[in-house]
Image 1 (cartoon, chains in turn red, green):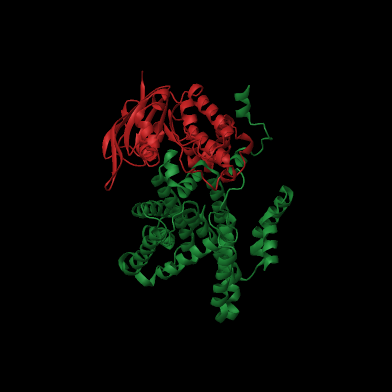
Image 2 (image 1 turned 90 degrees about the vertical axis):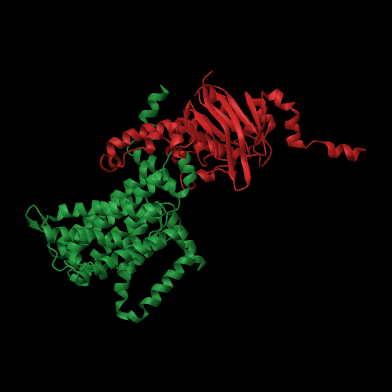
Amino acid sequence: MEKILQVKSATIRFGGLIAVDGVDLEQSRGEILSLIGPNGAGKTTFFNLLTGVYKPNEGTIKFLGQNITQMKAHERNRMGIARTFQNIRLIKSMTVLENILIAHPDCKNEKFVNALFFPGKTNLKRREIIAQCQELLQVVGLLEMEDELATSLPYGKQRLLEIARGLATRPKLLLLDEPGAGMNSFEKDELTQVIHRITKEMEIDVLIIEHDMKFVMGISDRIIVLDHGQKIAEGLPAEIQSNEKVIQAYLGSGEFVDEEDE
Amino acid sequence: MGKIKELYGKLGKTKLSNKTKSILMILAGLAALLCPFIITSKYTLHVIISCFIYACLTLSLNLIIGWSGQFSLGHVCFFGMGAYVTTLLMTNFGMNFFFAWIIGIVFTAGFAALLCLPTLKLRGDYIAVVTLGFGEVFRLFLTNAVDITRGPAGIPSVPDPTVFGLEISGKTAYYYFALILLIGFIVFMKRFNNSGFGMAVMTVNEDDIAATALGLDPRKYKLSAFAIGGGMAALVGGFYAVYMGMIAPTSFSYAESIKMVSMTVLGGMASIPGSILGAFLLTALPEMLRSFSEYRMVIYGAAMVIMMIFKPDGIWGRNKRRKNEYKYVAMRGVKNGENSASKKRNN
């Protein structure tokens, strides 16, 4: 099967701390892959390596067979990697629709000269762009709120808006950093539907970081577990659930409890 | 005080209907057109032209400070460069004003981009320090490169520009010239503000990590904002040179930069009406207060303090886009829900 993402022994150090330590990862096309692990396991740092916020000290990252290890973040996005952020990074001074527009390739690449001297022609083009962006808002169910300021939306909706913004860049791979954080169970169901639509209808692959086990187990095809920067397990959701090492990483070894019982 | 604040808030919320708006616009346009016939005093006309010049300069600086978020304190450098390059080309090579003007603008825009390069990695105050330094270096160059710029003596008798054989001279002609410039600048900034490019500049300003994740290269947008702002200042500089008829390094001192920054901050960051208002106020008020000049600085300082306390983002600051400006402009003339592009898709 064609691989969309291939990471080989990616390592990054911040001074003496090894945040990500020799992690291998492969994602096939059409697969929903999840990255889990306790707090401080290096999940978000790993995402930052993938998107180019940091460059790895060692290891290579290949996207659709092409080596992107040394590419800049905006170049990677133009190749087809989009992301959302754990701490929401919407543009606060812009409206919901404008937050999507800014990610649309035709909007951000619009020739300024055309906007200056040919407003008529530009406006026709813009209407098309707006229609496409509105369609994306429809997917995440935010079309009614398109004229509101992005930050006036409730938290869960802001996360959906970030997903839609990522989609607007026309990616092949979408990285979701804790998309369900701060959502109630109803919103999480909505999110699951949206993610399924993204993978099935739009044929965009998704890599998720998530803490909510129920959500992760339900949606992922495969799971990778990180702890202290290292990969400790990989497999199907059912396998992960019964993996000794994973349980230990999350809950501790249990030995201490045994001693108390005696 | 509370009452004033309330009133101010109400004023901000009042929405004028389109009809009142267009009537007001027509009245303002008529006033602007007939101004030189109503005002006969040359001095008053000069003050008004100065207002226009500063309004253009503030708009160009606001593009750099307000829209792209680079706190530049050396804007006078671009203003002066435009003036000097245009003048030197005209006096030394006998070039037509408009050719010289264009070369001056392009040259300065390129220079501004070059100046921006070392500041790309800097933030906030550090950019201010670097650009301030550049402004000073430029002024010292003007003063000391006697062979080229005639040093502190300046260049007298800058020739008047001619359009199709007609010479532009006299206050009235220059008044209309300045008015055209200002209107051009306003239209330019409006289109910039609503364009994809303008929104990209604002995105980079607000959050450069998010911007890169959306495929925007922050360097590109910061550089182009600086270059465009610098080019615009050079445009005003060229006009200033022919209007004044003489230029000297003293016109391009550090105090001018500070004045432009005050106009931007007082008027409102990233706001077109704010820039114009700030420029008009800070140009006209000192002139009006000339009769009790000993108190001028006191009043000026007090006004600044009061502003900072009650309205820190400027008189007409706009820190948020309250409506979908991009959509609003693109959909002008299209009735609600009748986007042809979206309709096509739905069918």
